[in-house]
Amino acid sequence: MKFKYNMCRSFLLIFLMGLSASLFGQVNQTDAKGKKQGKWIRYYANSKDKRYEGEFKDDKPIGKFIYYYPSGKVRAIITHDKVGDRSKAFYYFENDTLASVGIYRGENKDSVWVNFLPSGWPSTKETFNNGKLEGERITYYGEEVSEDGKTLIILRKENYKNDQLNGPFVEYFPDGVIRAEGNYLNGRLNGTVVRNHPNGKVMIRERWKYRNKHGWWETYDINGTLLGKKFYLKGQELEGEELDKYLQECKAKGVNPNN
Picture 1: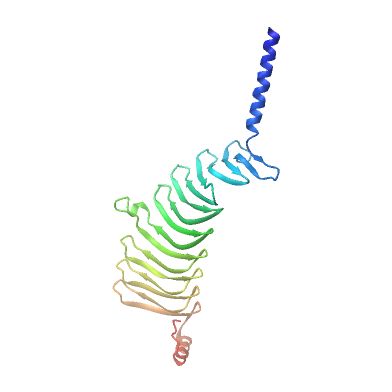
Picture 2: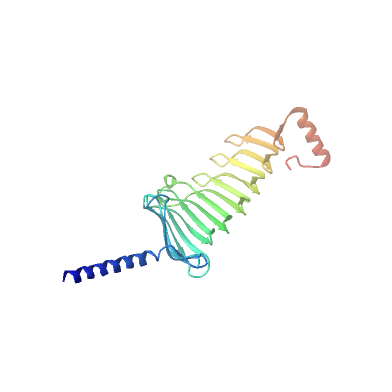
């Protein structure tokens, strides 16, 4: 009787070991072509802390993937569409508040992304195309500026093309008065930039040409009275006879010295 009991116990132990090995063997598998298949779990180096877990089919992530901080807190949840290469991503701070939310196409950011402060307050709203900033980007003031603690107040609007600042930008004071406005070309300030006093009157009128100061720069007091001006040519200030000579040359050629 004791022999039969020991035999049954041995068979049960072997069965459980085989079942455990079978279940374990279903994780982190690749097929004959080396492509990831089924459930995968990755850990941080030299650690038992999960880095991510999710499922693959033919090396392509499918469904929900969860990424973790070393502390075990959720770092991101990315859900992949069953068809196509679109994914919806939610990133979190370690205090569990949302850090950013947006869309991926493959491994590249796409469409609108919204980013948040650790307090949960929106900080920026930006648009991507194939991983590069494209279109309008909006930056918001912090929640301490909002009178009701709910309304978003715009600090700055700017435009991007192929991941570079291009086109008009405008900055605002908290009350909505324009603080500054101008233009970028290929990531560099270009043309006239106006910076205002809080009352909306011009404080500085700058002129740029491909990132360099170029033309007359003028400063004004809060009432609009001109305080002074300087002239720049390709980033270098011109004064005295050198300035007079250049202005005369521009006049003779019918050229605007600010251009």
